[in-house]
Length: 291
Ligand SMILES: [Zn+2]
Image 1 (tube, rainbow, N blue to C red):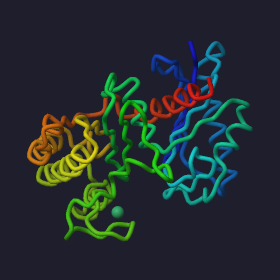
Image 2 (cartoon, protein in one colour):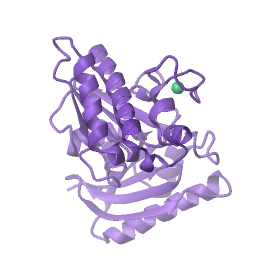
Image 3 (cartoon, rainbow, N blue to C red):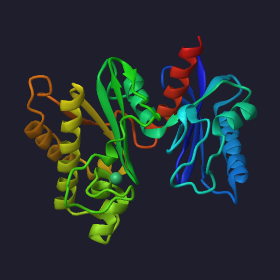
Image 4 (cartoon, protein in one colour):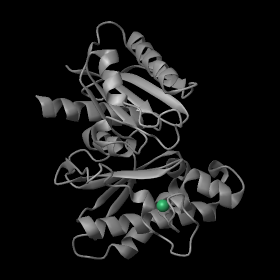
């Protein structure tokens, strides 16, 4: 059995786990994403990885490190500059982890990592064509087509957060207007309602679902896929009204013979496990490429 060391680098929290290749978490740890500078933050990364290894016990010896991290990053995570982690601008994450661990290290953005995780152990097992997306502090996604995770020219393929869903909508941090992220991310919803997204009223939940369904339907029509898995605290917190509205909009907008029957389903993982299992899946996929 292969054991993996998984690391999820988020804007507020670092999470680490030792995971086996059946997707079972053997030990985990979390720490806040804090540090006076890039090197100090990396020392926290080392500490959280060590804690997870101690929690898993000495029998579980990892063969590889898999990482999900916020973007942007250069291909393979050689250099990362996560938008919400100002300490890391051009930080050499992959090589730093390789030096720290002495193991092969594979890094991808967190949304693409989630797609790999959902395909291996979650709500998209056995599917060769699907979108996985996160609706949380940001909105991102990853696409598996013909059984392969799409990378794109700068490794950002699947970034559904900047599909325009309302041309008259809110200005987006990217400079465009009415992007999905500008309408349905947690901070966007809080800015509109004046309260945390968790307290959003029913109409707001339904509108968010409708806009997600609209964006997903466009992706389904464009790429010939019929499954979208949605994760993230905002989507999962909004629950049934959100998912029902997303499906209704998908049914209305995915009308081609090949896109009819598009399903929009919640993540197959409990909230805190998805990012770690995504990171673990990055490690497993990477290991497969080097034999
Ligand atoms: Zn945008």
